[in-house]
Length: 205
Image (cartoon, rainbow, N blue to C red):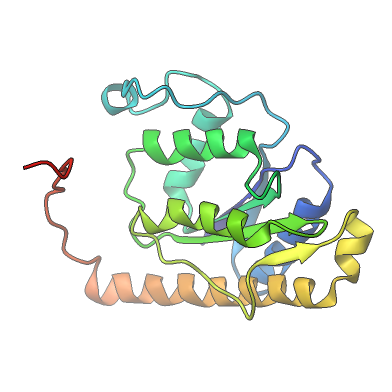
């Protein structure tokens, strides 16, 4: 069992990394393999809606998105971490997530998702909400914690001083491990939920 931890901060060893590392440590302690993937300092352009990925199975822009896609297909869960930029996730991370979730054709059903947010002060809940929408549109259960998954601080040292935030990260990791293991048992016993053919409408009759 494995979880990908996506670092959407341009600072590879900064506040978001510190939060993700605490989640990863708890996952590892509970028998879940982890890998942190640095995305925030990559040159990632946005989706152009060409839909070529529906034909080829991968994005036409051959960058970090296509590198991560096979890992996403194989993992049991994903944690997406971002700093707050104007009460929203890092723009490069949003471009990455748009293209990753849209271009990957592998079934995401029952992969476990979680969002982690770091900020000096404000904008955390709006950023948290934006990231969670990637999971809830993909039939992915969302792992929660004892509080919203956020840490506060302007440096990694300050984040480590956020005792409640760090505890929230550890609780998230433990809860996520439990959900992943429970889903594995459920899939073995009952299989995945029945699916209908997807109906697409534009709300015009």
